[in-house]
Image (cartoon, rainbow, N blue to C red; front, side):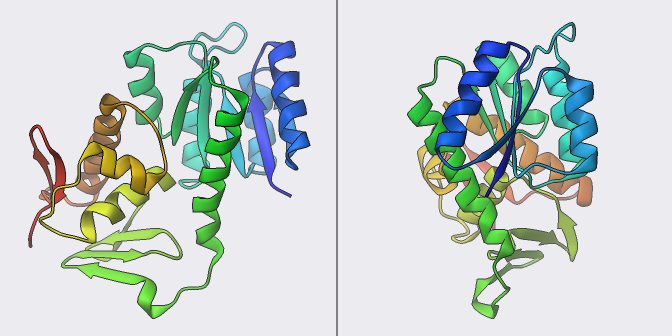
Length: 229
């Protein structure tokens, strides 16, 4: 049974989501503040976390919690579920390492579908490595089953959403992938600016490994492509 953590300071909202998720077969633990949630995560990581941004007297407590959880695990799926719908908050959330950003007017069936999609992708990590799951593109090596990416033999820690975007680009070098293509590959439905934020974060992670990294090209008006070696 998958364990989902919900960090939401409004009791009625937290209990509503908890009841719905339990009916769908998930184990759910709720927290109303950042310190309690962080302490619980330090004891045992959840299989997925749903986090609000404003937590009690911490206006951006959810952002801080996301950063802490992402430092503990590069792969635990994280969803922001918040009333804050500005582009600035969306971009900040994704830069913190979240896999998805939803507003509280999102329907419950849609939320359940997004959670299921993230679990389907993260479950691939538990599959044994097979030779045909490995893809090499010059200095890039991708293990599809384990969802691991290496650049010049150094691991690049990506979220599940970032992993599938890199995989989509690298499997056909030189071919332009539109933002819609990347959404389809990553099984997310977001706006163009959110895709742009993901790509910027991916580039930054590769550059941290290799300052000369320049393989992800922007094709203005069309999308992105993995450049040649």
